[in-house]
Image 1 (cartoon, helix red, strand yellow):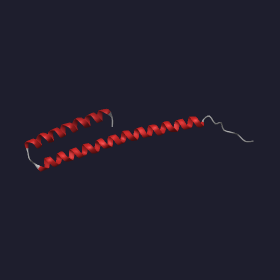
Image 2 (spheres, rainbow, N blue to C red):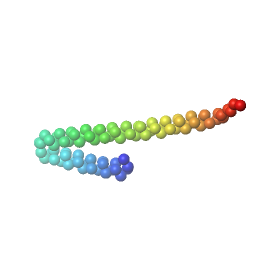
Image 3 (cartoon, helix red, strand yellow):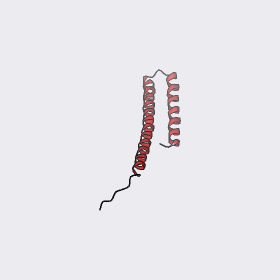
Image 4 (tube, rainbow, N blue to C red):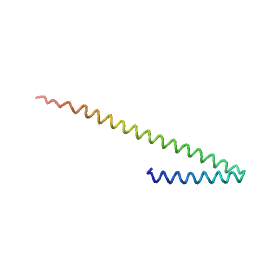
Length: 83
């Protein structure tokens, strides 16, 4: 997800949650309350997914760094050719 995609997602999410809260204040409709709860759950789930993606990116970067370091350390050994 690009920075523009994230920004659009958050703006639309804010708009949707704001409208649901506005409509919920004007009405006692249970469907609106349920829609608000669903929106909250979706938001929490998406936030968790974003955290997980960031953690995985950091883990991949660390693994790459360790692999490159190990390759560099091993490059000091030269291949021995036997006759």
